[in-house]
Image (cartoon, rainbow, N blue to C red):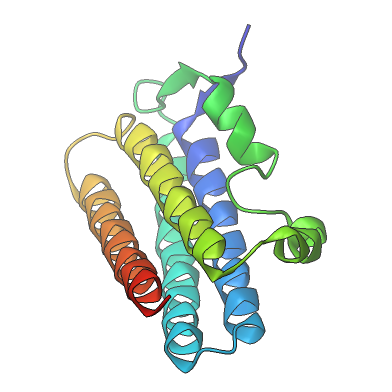
Length: 165
């Protein structure tokens, strides 16, 4: 049986994942030899760090709202949330070197980054289900749009890579 997860805890999880995502993209930028990828990964790292700040502010609001029992949303955690926590979406700090060592090429890196962005959208969508109308939902909607933009950028980089090979 899954554990109960509050909206506040989901938001804190999203903050942690965005911070991991930022570090992931910084590592990717440092490890690639292609200037376009270095620039794009650096931009993505900055955006993920900014997302973490925005979600952190939202988490503070949710903590304040959770003092009102009617405002505190709850749900059962499913296997996908367990995967987020265990670092299968974005590698943990201690696993990141092994992650990059196991990559077979830039194409695989881009595919994994696209999948991580998709998973982040799934988490944000789950978080949004807890929120009432208003500013909190707007913050999550904006973050989802940003993550969709990341997927588009990564896909363009992937297609450019395929055309060059």
